[in-house]
Length: 212
Length: 216
Image 1 (cartoon, rainbow over the protein chains, first blue to last red):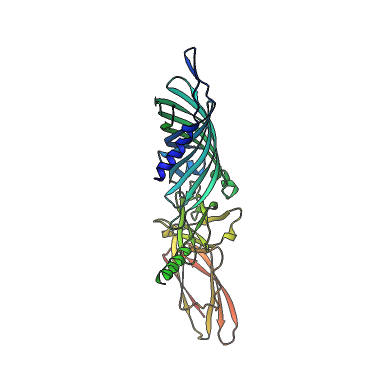
Image 2: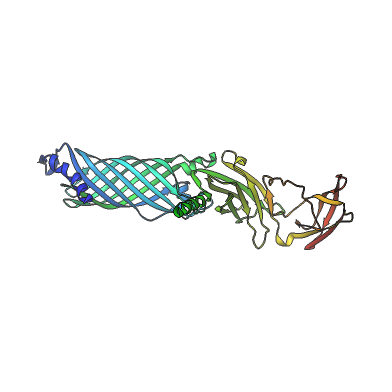
């Protein structure tokens, strides 16, 4: 019952306030001159992390091949979109000399992204974006309680989107993610724990409420 | 009432476990050498954390080609002390640095320094027979100086005992072969309270056992 109510709350504003699209065909191009609108889109994707340099993620861990990601876009202004998202990734510890005697580290992020939808054709779109977020690194040693530390993320990247049908698209994405943590340690080890440079590769689907 | 008691016991046990602050990291570093000063490569090093109820093997690593090691561990929240174990193996005898406190760290780091390991076949068991000739006398201190294959090295001394320990009958130590040791000991007369100190030299040969006698 709760899920039904939530779904109605998400869709209802669209139904009530959706603006008619005013499309023009000029030089065999379809142009959409819609203004500010409510355009729900759900991104579901698998995420692959590649960590660069000498830091605790690249040196001390081995990232699982895929993690999970979810992004929700609600607002669209002309071609610009804004979305909020969440990602989860599990890391295996491979260097107990610098990380400690544990098996896993859990990497969770939340973020906001500003995207631009550049329609290359009827089916293909390019979606560059910038984003900002936060990452939580959670670890648990032996039988102790789990503990965490946090960092700030800056993203820059793009998605390549293929529209399958009106409401469903496939996409693949690439981004560069710069994370800064605030771990207290010896000055010779500060960069190792606090500066992360990461490339992410995503593969997933986009479900749009309304026309894609 | 039973549930309350059970909850209290569980809570008490849980609070005894060592907890960690993962946003702070401590560094332990040092170098492992053999008797001739050559670095020992790929030697196992362990970091342990203790409190009154619990102990954790919190990190481990191996020495590099220069015998150096660096161990980085999360900061414990409720520890009593740390220990760095230079592990023994088929060739070398183990050493351990115990009673390391958080206050010994500077800028989140402690340097253990150079550790000399002795090969098993380079160790002689020094066996000192304590021969009590005068029943009023007791040996109140024994100290050896030289190449000691000491297994435990106290970074901070253990808590002082409320009484003066006495040594009886026998004293043993693992020492390196082919050296001369300096033996210092104190003899205390239980009746007069007078304490006399002595220095003697012990020649350790290539034998697996070195015997010596103190008559007091």
